[in-house]
Image (cartoon, rainbow, N blue to C red; front, side, top):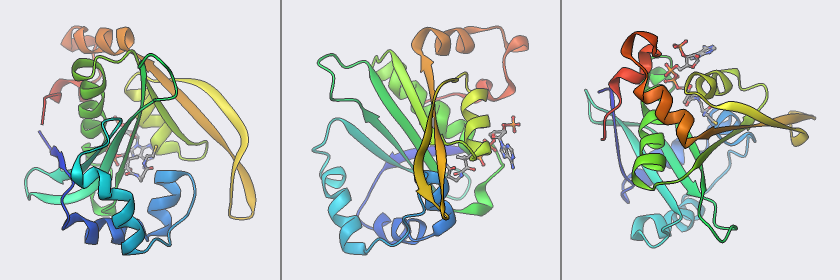
Length: 195
Ligand SMILES: CC(C)(COP(=O)(O)OP(=O)(O)OC[C@H]1O[C@@H](n2cnc3c(N)ncnc32)[C@H](O)[C@@H]1OP(=O)(O)O)[C@@H](O)C(=O)NCCC(=O)NCCS
């Protein structure tokens, strides 16, 4: 295992503040380069997380297992506008750019999907990003997500509009990828474990 997902702690706010004031990280993570966030605003945003009151939203710190250092954050947001709970958005960002391209994102996303389907017992996972975030789109597709919608000109930054892409993964698709014989599976699926 490469990463561990753990709960947010108060001392993580300093690191989150650094990551969430980084224009590049925020553009990729949120599809909008909204990178001016005060510690106080962040603290307010995460107050419920820290208390664990909000059952519809789970936030994690991604830690590199070898060093125990925080390298990013991840979220699961259960859709609560439906009367039946079926769907959650998954999101992740490696705030430390030195951690990119080492398989950490793949493992983190798989851990989130494990939680969504095998612990929360949901039917569907969604992945949203802007169309030009190729790494994000490639990662989602590698995990089995299918592109389901393109919201044209849905976000504006850098003096122009950008499309948003919505990708979806159903539980049976996830399970069939997971239970496929090792030889026909993507290499990344082999190190799935709980944190
Ligand atoms: C997107 C992100 C989570 C991916 O994590 P990562 O650890 O860098 O990615 P991995 O090493 O696990 O690679 C996963 C896949 O992404 C794609 N990928 C990774 N780096 C890539 C690159 N430079 N160019 C194109 N595709 C790339 C590949 O499909 C790769 O699979 P492969 O190695 O089997 O070909 C990470 O780069 C990140 O945090 N980026 C900034 C925030 C962000 O974009 N979050 C997603 C918002 S929805």
